[in-house]
Length: 426
Image (cartoon, rainbow, N blue to C red):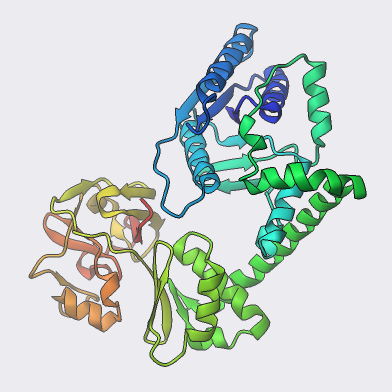
């Protein structure tokens, strides 16, 4: 199954038609995914047009499904309409693609779209990551997002539509000069293209070179972070030993890994100067905060508020990611040869909040002690002690930050799994 993001506009109409032509002889089914943003008076008619067009193509013998989703009006204060629409659109496309079993979603961006993105990023002082613009293909959250037409000129797409007598809808909001891309497209681009006829091609090429540079930077940063971190902690002394020109790059990479989102430049700048400054010990960050503790930096998620009072039961014997929504986290399960818990134990894990009297044994020859003492001994800061505990028949099996209780470690040769708690991923 291949999915195509289908807005009904010029580019997505051509892409969907071309995808049907390519997939038909191969027996590959196609899903057309439409997102209704609810921002334009004609949005309902666009949805109807897309549904009718897909119905016609299906009647003509194409293996085509149509799916649409309306975005909820949940814009975040301070977030631009463009950012809200983009965030909601990709979430909706991912949900619909997964429902239809499509592992790839095709997007209709072309060469001039790429050139415009490069210019907008440059005008916003974007770094190498921004100048890399849109990736040709990237895997995120189980979906491959692909842009097969990044080297195709927009005029060629329009010619394809005319040759095949295809109809599309025109989005009147593309003329709204409140949006930066529209201002660039209508007021700047005509003069730029007149002065530099190869502007689109050359700027798209520059974006491709920036993407190559970004990949090299990422590989260097990943190696530096591997050297300077232990688990989820960045050791400040080791980080300071990294050559200065790579230190910022490594910090940015570590923050992205820790928070699962790009780090604001303002946060990176502050940490570059304040991470080891006297008195500084905590910095706000999107979705959480960065904390200095015992010579390390740690990222911690926002407090989840009051802990759930009910005990949950989870069958976690299969490797993979098990969402625990009430605790706003994910239990990562991985098959291991040693150091894990028996698969039989994991078939019925009880998940609950900490309780008075809870005790944990960190080693087979060590006594069990209260969770508070074990946290202190292991150097787990207070803000990382808010997660759930995992039990079997009322006895603690696994505690985030401490690991598996020694009394539940599987015997050698027994099928077993390792458990890792990932906060704020649900």
